[in-house]
Image (cartoon, rainbow, N blue to C red; front, side, top):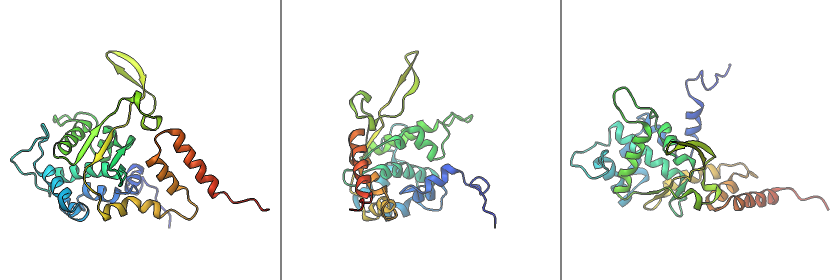
Length: 242
């Protein structure tokens, strides 16, 4: 039987790649309504963290992030999308410190992953990046996330994006912007830890995936990262016969 390619099967390469991220199945399940926000929170965020997250989603105002009186039911599409946005931060975080940083946290990247348009709609709906900013404001207000974007001049190369042209104060300049930094407040449940480490455990014997993951999470400079990878490759290389 002839295999259909990714496009003929109706699944874009981006979506297929997304599902293979540690929490990709949860995020895709929420966005497609196969999973409910209540189910994901009860299973993966028990205790106080789950209570705060539920409160943020149900009562956080999209206008200013503050608490509102009107309830936003967890069964709604908006609630599922907000939880998916939170999972994107959790997926990038180191379970030991809760710290997350990288290009996956760019607002445009998050918007695309959540299925939001990057341009303003004819019906007046905000852009995808603006919607992502609204979610982040709510999570910060309710104490489930801490967000910051450091000065690009004061961070190592591994925390800066690629050199890009942009317009600043009416002039075209080239700059490298620092990645967003997020701190996931609360402890990671065993269920979440299991999902975050599954990709590493599933790596074949002799694979450099575990070393890559460890170096990416602990290195503070590009030199430290490549040094750790070089040491891993040397350790894996077969010894020459005596």
